[in-house]
Length: 372
Image 1 (spheres, rainbow, N blue to C red):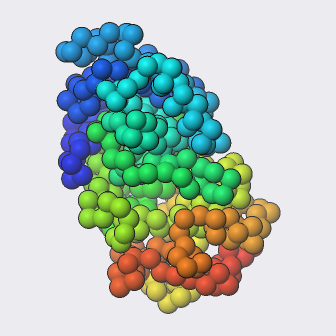
Image 2: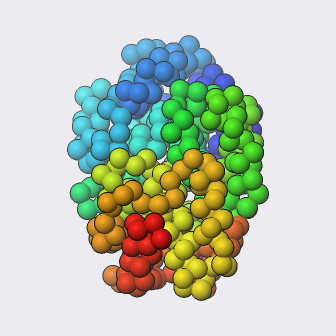
Image 3: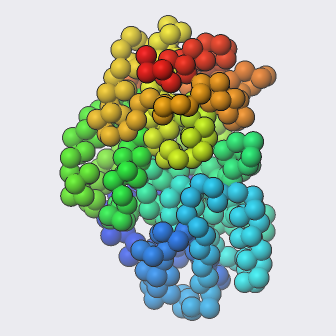
């Protein structure tokens, strides 16, 4: 078991750690009622286990009538204000008061949505994050960002609401398709680009075993812990994203535009992989990044089985329009988190975000779409 406590709440990385849920919840979020929010994919694998753990493993005599469940359809398209509203109405119908804790059991969509429910219900109740995808383990569950999507863009309505605890059990990755595992590696690679290139070497070393489903337990703990520590250290220095935390947005300005332009056919990590390659090329074009940085990132994402270029037929103008509906702009100009080289980010003098004229970004987007 590995515990990271940089952020003031424990992030536990432990293969088989689901057996520890009751202990962690009792220590960090003791409550009268518990509501497990999950999706229909995850529910079939882990809901009964977590629910039973809360009831049977608690030393406080938690009875079944105090553990409720909310199961929603899986998919980004369900991370909406309407779904948030329906869940909060359900909590009211259950009679949940301020002595309630939320258990977010699932991937990034569930973590964001359940976290936003917790942030807003009764002006804020505790949430324990139990991520079940690699992407959620190394990124979405850590740092306290919660949100829902709107027609105007992804994560446009949300709040900062740090979890009471995060329980990461790499063994849950056994239920993921290979494509979902690869998607999660995009965020691990991102952490390598922004802080420590050797993380990428670790990804490449474990790839064969990972995709052959031979390393989905304790063998993944070191890579996950290292990636989480990088993110936790950044968040600890800038919880509200006023400066340094912006480096975690590398690949996301373009990536979110590509993800939306695909109508969410692309997985989040796939879109971020494309975004990282494009933003590194943008950094090179601006003379910010060392020549070869984009090629090195493209090589890393390709070795991880991730796409490095936009899908055929994706219009650069549409991607840019969708990027402009995202949150990363100031005074009408889009800002980017750009690398200097592998393991080091640019922009310290400008608050870790660099404004770039749309015409320059459009050149990169068109090259990305034309496979140049």
